[in-house]
Image (cartoon, rainbow, N blue to C red; front, side, top):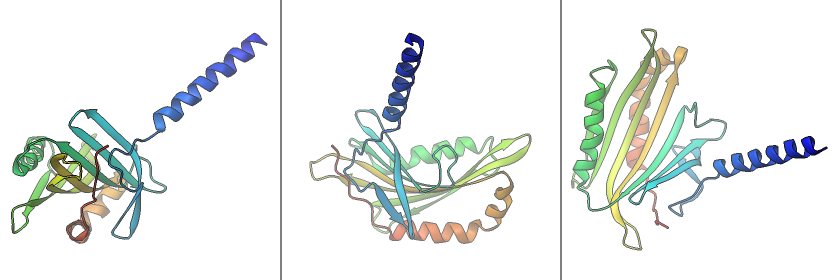
Length: 196
């Protein structure tokens, strides 16, 4: 009886730990769901690893964060940053990746007033000499100040992944897919956040 009670107690503790681990904190006070290009994306993961960085990830119903096909990201870096510097950090990562990733490439679009940027890029991973994952992303950057006066760089982004046998089909349709989703990102209003 004691062994059964102990086993049930351990199981309860583990279950509680998993539930606690799965909980997501909404750091922005935004809706739990964001509609992008006619698809609802739900908040599934968030992080606040240091005092100035916040990150939310959203995926459509039926997808998993471990093996997603589509994801929205909403990141905020609090501080006095030049927008171009934040964009350049990501460009530098892509340039470094080009040394080992033959697919890696990017395109940068600047708004006429120079206050917003969209970085559109492609990356891949390889297994046994064959591309087994390709990821296209578009990152929309702008300086942002919330109602409480928190100032920084806000990033609203879309990512799409294709895996294994779906890679070739996706690459063939990439031009059309890329333009549709990049234009959707340009037209989508940047979510209003309020740091808690």
